[in-house]
Length: 340
Ligand SMILES: Cc1cc2nc3c(=O)[nH]c(=O)nc-3n(C[C@H](O)[C@H](O)[C@H](O)COP(=O)(O)O)c2cc1C
Image (cartoon, rainbow, N blue to C red; front, top):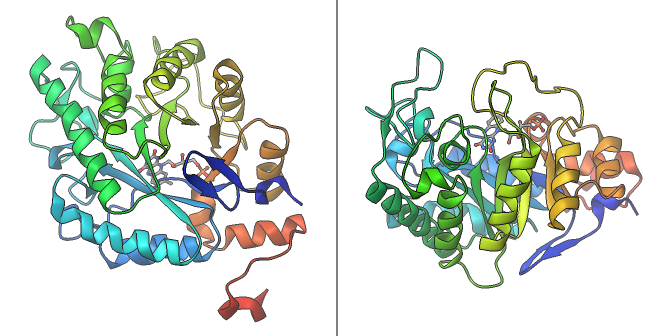
C-alpha cells in the first residue's frame, strides 16, 4: 500500500487519500459577480472524479475590492452560497472532500480603484496601485468580513476552510515586517490580524471542522522574514485554532539575494520544519507531481498531505495515474474502468 493512498483524518475531515488539489485562481468569473459558474463546476468536479482526496477551491475573496482581478471568486454575500453549494454537492458525489480558500488580496488587488493594505506601500510592478492604509476600525471590520465569509462557506457545505496567509496577500501583508509598518496593535504584533481572523472564522465553523492556513514559510525580498518568524507565526495561529498548516513560500515581492529553489520538492523542508517545531499536521506543495516524489514526501513523514497544483491542471486524473505508477489497486470511476 502506497502511503499516498492511505486515509487521513483531522477533526471531522476524513480524506480517502493524501492528495490535495492546490487552490488555483481560474480568473473565470466572466459575470464579475464573484459567483462560480459552469467553468468552476466542471473544473473542480473533474478533479473529484479524477480521485483527489481534498479539493481546495481557489482564492475566494471576502469583499469585491479584495479580489486580485474582477474575474475572481467571492463569498461577500449570501447570494454566493448556492453556486458554491452546487460544486460542493457534486464533489461529494464523487467521493472527494472539498474546502475553499478564503482571502483578501490587499495591496495586490489589481482592479480595485484604491486597494487597501496594512501600510501604504505599493507592490512593485506597473499594474499595482499605491494602497491606502486601513484604519484600526477598518481592520476590525475586515476581521468580521472573514468571519462572515466563513459562515457562508459552512452554509454551502464545505468540509474545511483554508485561510490564505501566503503569497503576499492581505494576511501575509500583516505578518511581514516589510509590508506592515503600522504603529497600532496590528503593527506592534505582526501575528495579531491573522490570530483575530482565525478566531472569527473558527467561531463560525462547527467545533470539529478543521481550519487550514496557507503560509509563506520564508520571504525572498531583501529584509523579508525567514523560517523562524514563520514558525512563531504558526505557533500563534495554532494556539488561535488552526489545525493544519499548508506550507508554501514567497510571493511578497521580487526576490532579492535569497531565491526560491524552483526544483522538485523545494518547499518540503519548510513543511518538515514547521511540522517538527509545532507538531501540527502539514500540507507540502510545490513541484511535487512526480509520483515517486509525492509518495516519498508522505512516506518519510515530511508532510501529512501533498498538494498538487499544475500537475492537476495538466491531468485531472493525476491521482489515478499516481496509483497506477505506485502499483496501488485502482479506484477508477466505473464509466472509465475500461480505459485503465
Ligand atoms: C494558475 C495558478 C493559480 C494559482 N492560484 C492560487 C491561489 O488561488 N491560491 C494559492 O494559495 N496559490 C495559488 N497558486 C499556487 C498553487 O496553489 C501552488 O502552490 C503552486 O502552483 C505550486 O504547486 P505546483 O508546483 O504543484 O503547481 C496558483 C498557481 C497556479 C499555477
